[in-house]
Image 1 (cartoon, rainbow, N blue to C red):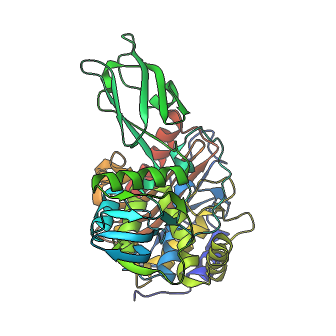
Image 2: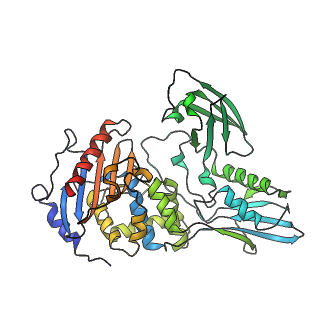
Image 3: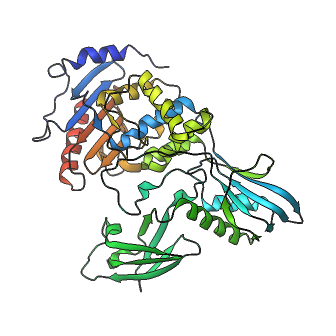
Length: 456
């Protein structure tokens, strides 16, 4: 355990004099005076090196995932694994089940259809005289959103599910070398391809999803629009199918791969008490799920971990309400709370999940002094090397371990900065800027970079 002083008292004392006594100074960009917040805390000397508007509650975008990480690690072991099971009722004779098969989810956000194939292959059943039931009842209520703008089929709108196969995402791959062709991961669906190559387009747009129209008509996906020749092997990802239809589609795929026949239907039903276990498959450890969540800023993982607080710790009568109580109790008990904060999803897809730089700093210091700090730290992207920092702060390299956060009008960084001499916990947040164009992010990143260079 690292040496921990009464940092909360120290912060309260220093906040009132932050205009005049800090070791480093960087000019606030013109027009950004009321848009920025920052705080830099030396973890070795227990001193604030820089502070600007530290107590202003702001939107923090995906920096919210760090708070979710800390709450979860404080309550669930880092080696926890989700378990997906195959159970049955009836009788199995000569590879034939006369009865019903149950696929029982535990909320694993990493479950793929290939995992499902492995799981079904373990049971050695080739024919089912009965129904196949999906039991996704482990989650019974869900996170909320207040996003600035919600686009049709937006992947960020996928909600956690007790049985979450392939993150419920529909993926299309464009092929343009010879003629336009589209392949997808949607088993049993036909693609009606009406795409056109526009020779005037010289590159594949970063916002190509906005240039393409999708229409679902029964089991046919109609895809149309104009694209560039340069879009070859480009992937399009959508929240296209409702969760129930996606799961049924993925299960039909797995059954087809294994040549398993069935006489009944695929439906949803809670597993009865008299069912028997046939096989199970475990997810990777929670620590690896957290690592991917923070490296790639996966919203679904954060929302799932939030609900897992309920399924792991409580009677789970109301997944979201139970998890919300645990979450808010933790942040209130650890002085990470302010009156403008309202928990919605724990991922930062929100207009009300507001925290101040001081709130976030308190959380970073608590994490730094916790027994699970290594898991927390390892999950942070490394500047210029991986995750969402792969193209940012490249010259600073391994010194920077930040979680990034971006909304249309928000940019934020929270994490740690290590020099040869000291370790720092740092928070930088900008609100009311335009991140859809390069100007504001460039100015904000330059300001952050200049502050960090002052510490070197």
